[in-house]
Length: 615
Image (cartoon, rainbow, N blue to C red; front, top):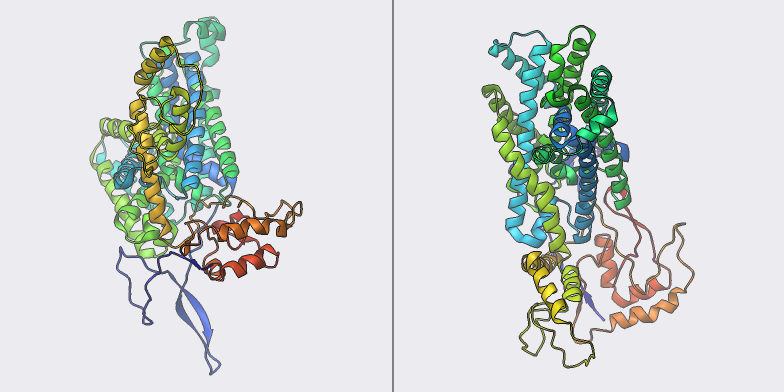
C-alpha cells in the first residue's frame, strides 16, 4: 500500500539573499563565525530556520495574568461593593473570579482541541473571516483603550505627586512624555510576553502594598463602632436591587483579561492544560484576595461616601494617613508603567495578524514576525504615539472608554467564549438536544441516498430499526415545545450547525498545509491499536506490540481502491516523519516490532507521546 502525503511545499529561495518587504514574511538571520581555508575567521549572516521564543514559569505567567486583570481597577472595587451591597459584593467578586478562571481554561482547551494558537484563529475556524476580523478588532479596541487610560492616569497622578500646580498643563504634558519615554517605551520594545514576567512581579508587589495601605489606614474601626459592628452593617447592606447592576458592571470588567489570554498562555513553558490551569487558579485566587480586601476595607471605612477612586476619600485626612494615601497613589501610578506594556503587546499582536502576510503572521506567531528589530520598533512606536497624543491633548476620555470597554469587553469576555464553545462542540450539542427533545437534526446525514424530510420539530423517521416505545403524553410534548422556544433553541442549534460545518471546512483547509506544532502545543491523542510510552519512559509491555500488528495492517488495507491520504495531525515531527511515512507498510512493520519507536518534543519543549508515524 502506497501512502501519499498531501502538503504545501514552500517555494525555493534564491541563493542570493534579497531583503524582504516590511510586511512580507522573511526568515530571521543570525551572525555565525566561520573559518576560512587560510586560517582566518569572520562573521557572516546565516538564516535561522526557527526563532526561539522566551518562555516563563507558572509563577511568571500567573504574575502576567494578575497584572493584566487588576491594573487600575482595584481602587474602584470599594465603589462597586457600595453599589451592590456588602454581602452581594463579596459574593460577586468571588463569582466573577470563578467565571473568569473557567473562561480562560475553556478558551485555551478549546483552542488545543481545534489545534489553533490564538483567539482570532479560533473564531476563524467556526465563523470564517468574519469571526477572525470581529475578534481582532475587539481585541484592538480593548487593548488600545487600556493603553490610553493608563497614560491618562499617569498624567493626572504623577505631576501631583511631584508638586506641580494643577493649572500648569505644559509641565504635566512634559512629565508624561519624559516618564513614558524613559520607562514605558523600553519595556514595550521587548519581543516576548515572557520578558514582562519580572516587571509584572514588581507590579503585583506594588498592588499588594497599595491594598495594604487602604486596609491599614482606612478608618474601619471607627465606622464599625458607629454602625454597631460588622453584623449590623452586613444585615443592612445585603443587596441593593436598585444599583446592583452598576456594581456588577464594574466588577465584571475588572476581571476582563481574555484579550491577552492566548498571548500569556503561549508564553508559558510546557503549556499543558494542567500547567495553564495552575497559573489561572493562582492568578485569580490572588486577585480575589487583593480586590476583596480592598473592596471590604474601603466600603466599611467610608460606607455611602465611597468614591469611584477610594484613594480620593483620603484627601480629607491629615498627617500620617494623608502621607500614606500619597504613597498608595505613587504605587498605583508606578503600576501603570508596568501594566501599559501588557496591552501594548496585544495591540501589536493584532497589527501583526491584520497587516502582515504569511502563515506565521496569520496564526499570531509574534516571535517569528517581530524577530526583525525594525518591525518591532516601528510597530511599538506607532502604538505608543497613537495613545500618547490623545492622552496629552484630552483631559477626560472616560465616556469614550466606557463605551468601547463595554462593547469590546462584553464581546471578548462573555459573548465570545460562549459562542466559540457552542460552535466548536456543535455536534455534541446537537446530539444532546436530540436526546432530550427526541427529534433528529436537520441535515444530519447529507450523504444519505434517501431524501427524507426531517426537522428538529418532526419525529425521527427510521425504517431500518423498529423501536417500541411509549409515546410522550400531551403535557410532555407541550412542555418540551415551550421550553424549546423559551430557551431560544432555534438560535443555539443554528449556531451549532453552522459551527459544525465551518469547522469541518476549516480542518479540510488546514489538512493541505504542512503539519506543525503551534506555540500553544498539542499532544497527539493515543492511537488505537498502537503501543504507548508509560510515565517511566519505557514502552508499555502489558500487551505485546506484535499482538497489535493485525489492527495496523487492517487499517493499511482498508482502502484498496486508491492511495491513502493521511489527515492533518496524523503525522508529527516534520520531515523525518514524512520520510518515514513514505516508506509505508515496511516502516510501520519495523515500528510495531519496536525498532524505531522514539520520544519527541514539540515546540517549547512540550512533551508529547506518539510514534514517528500514526495511521
